[in-house]
Length: 131
Image 1 (cartoon, one colour):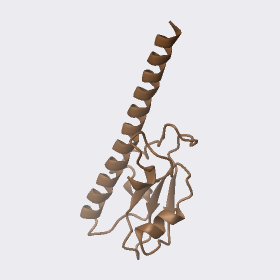
Image 2 (cartoon, one colour):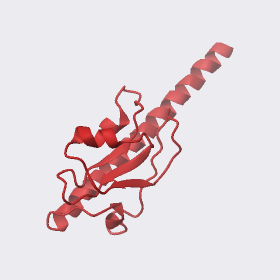
Image 3 (cartoon, one colour):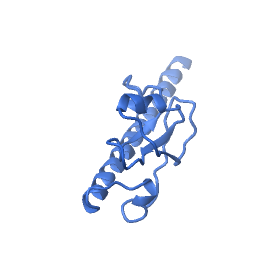
């Protein structure tokens, strides 16, 4: 009896993880899509921060909940105001905060980049900040 209970609880845990990971990926993609729409409607300019999307494009910043990490759910966004010259350099600035990160430097070719600041891996073995 204990063995079947442990199999069921493990499968429930795996299902919950898959759902939460899917939601995080979906929110990441949705915000990136909205940033593209904003860019198109504002003559090739991204907003200085995600607040520029509110409320016309996005009712609120989605909560980021990353399963199997030490990070608490958060809707906070770190805006990088002075971006480095490359994506590799940008990733070195990440702090593993478990928060959304946005490049708000209009002089940078990375302006408008939106990513997850987390060095942990998802169930598929991909680093969250690499999505």
